[in-house]
Length: 144
Image 1 (cartoon, one colour):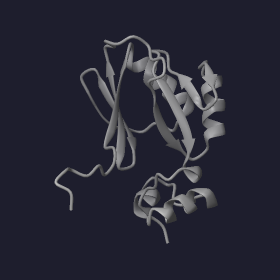
Image 2 (tube, helix red, strand yellow):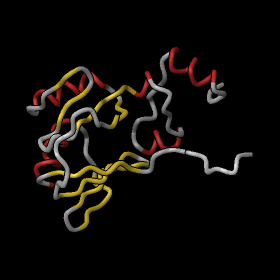
Image 3 (tube, helix red, strand yellow):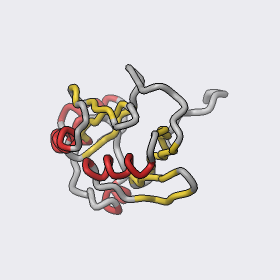
Image 4 (cartoon, rainbow, N blue to C red):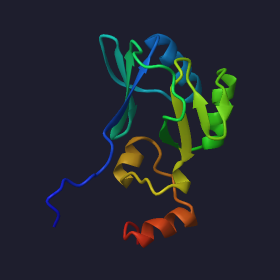
């Protein structure tokens, strides 16, 4: 047993935006956005057992390479919706109106997993994994 703390997952990702309402509108044109809560100048977008924290009042310049990846049920649909919302889409990445770089990856194709009860609670109980993702998970002892 190590004397160091073990990384277990990500509870949330926080981004700064110029205009909170504009950001929520933009994201709502791409994703099924459900708010976990709001506070002064902030909104919390629910992702089951995780969330995206959005804070109004950007203090950094727009992102170049810095980004974060969101796992979605259908990456092609998300990117199509991002284009329709006016985003500059490059590969699996797009920029929001404040310059934050989002990357979308499909649940079926990545090692990231949610517990079955979390998926059911999110209305996504039918999501499965590709053979390649299952192989990677099995190699780590994370799937039967």
